Amino acid sequence: MTHYFDKAIQAVSDIDAQSDEEFLKELQVIERRIVDDVAMCTGDREFPNHLRQAIMKVVANSQARVDRAPFGPTPGLKISLATRSSQLLSELHRAFHLVAAAKIKTRFGTLTDDPSANVKARDTHDGEEVS
Image (cartoon, rainbow, N blue to C red; front, top):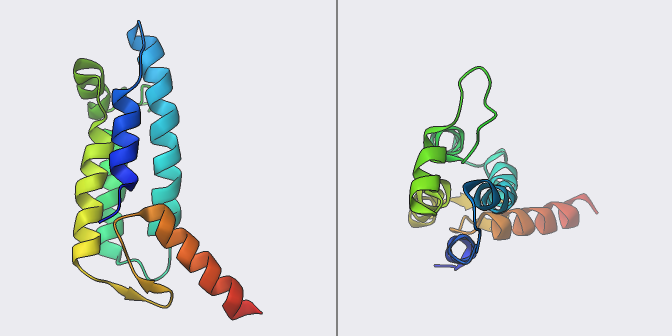
């Protein structure tokens, strides 16, 4: 298993914010980077649809966001502020362990628990495939 999510979770733990607003601002930067990687990974045509749907539901509900009009704050926001952690990262970590355990074979190799590594492997493969 990789340390992709462990590093992100540690980065959240290392946030030294004096206020909820300051903590939330730094947390959202970390979560946004992870969500971008996850979206690029799960958006691949070979990523299993049932896992994609489950992971996108985690993102929608667990991300620490206030600006989800007309729905209001995400459930993950209150948890993140109360615990000074990221519910999103914990849930995605768990989900990507399931992805890796499923040993899903794709054109660019077996999916791992690191969405950024999956994207790099895909882009490398597809770049070579096009040439």
